[in-house]
Length: 517
Image (cartoon, rainbow, N blue to C red; front, side):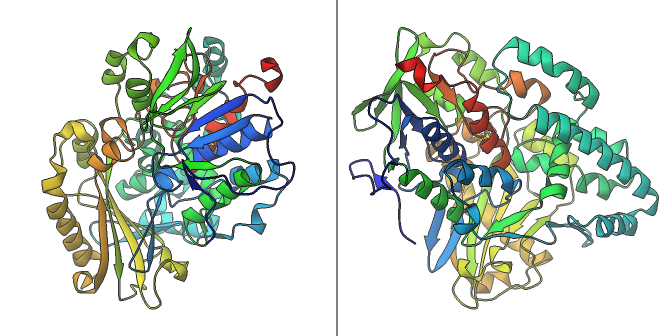
């Protein structure tokens, strides 16, 4: 695949005539090239800004980085693509069709949820099949399931359609949202909401696990996130052929055609602030780059704690950052096999013996337990290009506590990987160990050291009610004029739709280019 990114010292690729910003256009610097940063760069460029993107890693993507080794392609994540219309919107802004660049395939089923006793639920977008699956577990819960769908649809309309792209950077926006939050009874946890409709304990898990995909504990995050259920049912769960990296490369190409290069190997060490306003950045190599506005796609807690000097932070003080409740982290094992495991679907949840107790260990006790629940991803179920012929590519992800657990991951990583291997061999992949031909792991320490995530938390602040919307780090900085935030750790939150929507919210708060004239 042709590369459209350059190291910081390289030259930008050639662009179409007229693609560059006009002379004298205000300059926007975007820190980070995850989905939020790339989407923000596209939207800012289409608004008339001259845009530069700086990326710490050696390739674009951020958390959507791609590992390639031994003939396998491993998407670091995310791998669940919903709301494809939000991606399509970025191509439309650039006068293009996403279908000309990206082959997006719907998945069926979306997920298989396997319980500890060996039973499983196939979760799909087919209404009749979903009712049949519910009835297979608990016929008496079908009517409650239908009522749950109606409630989730209300949360989707109010929480996603009406509030998702609102920037929430003033008290007036919070007050305006209060009636919707009251209608959704947003003070309930999603598990409590689901339990109000369903009695079967397995079905309660099936309908409440979604917040784990965006860093939240189903027993504590607001029920507003039941909107994910409706989002998936209406628009499906998809796979981009070639992997998530194909989407990243597609967005980078859109930028390249408009004269915007993603400058890699370019870690930002400081955001310059003069008279209360962001004026540029300083890189690890000591070079300084001036800008009219700065947009951070980095972890917001890390951005404020490490990139903005304390004297410029009256709201996001060190104490406030430290007192936040942060999402879990992730242990991810990427592996390739010389055998194909045809019984494993594209997305599979392999649940352990505990649900609520395990989540308490992860989120509240910050204790690395001996048991775990796993998300098993097999992209070669859909896309043979992700592995050599006759082989399978996988990753298996275990939610784990962030670094407050005190775990020495250098010592624990290999024993933990071996425990996951045994669990997979005992459940869905017998004989796995003798077929592994490629392997690598990512730990919470990597999230901290490599991805610069505060506490190694994979999704920033946990999406609790009082850490969502107006209470979440704002898209327009509360402390520094001309500084803006996009990505998983700002409003509206994690997941591909969330980070893309954060870039859309950004459009509503950045200055118009004419204001710099």
